[in-house]
Image (cartoon, rainbow, N blue to C red; front, side):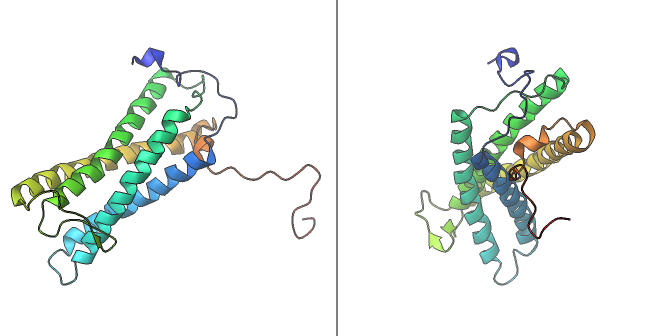
Length: 202
């Protein structure tokens, strides 16, 4: 598909917002991805300590949860197309947003896949919150290390993409103030006209 054919480009969206399901999935995934990345860096620093395997098991388990949520988010997105970005945005910014968004989706799929494939080739295999999953292949150290190297490279690439995504969001919220950020933020419940705040008048 050409960029020029994408319906997300350069059409005035008004006050359109993402659905609550999409908003909840977005921020839940953001929290889990940042947390599991921090956990990954921590566990590699203590991998030789007694009991370190519990951190590795937790990292794998959260990775499986992330993979399932990403699939759910992708399916939701396919059936709920977002409204266009504001026509006031420069075209390069709209195209950059589209490219970064697709790279983030690709990274969110490949990160857990490469990590779990690497884990499947280790002697310990994969356990989901204590439940040992069936082994699909015999342990192979070199194969596991190859997947883990790709996994680590993707972590750094995703860190750069997330930083760029956050910077763009803050620009829209604090500098442009074009309500693009509010599309993916939690909507405040509106009080009926004439109603008073709880606790009386202020």
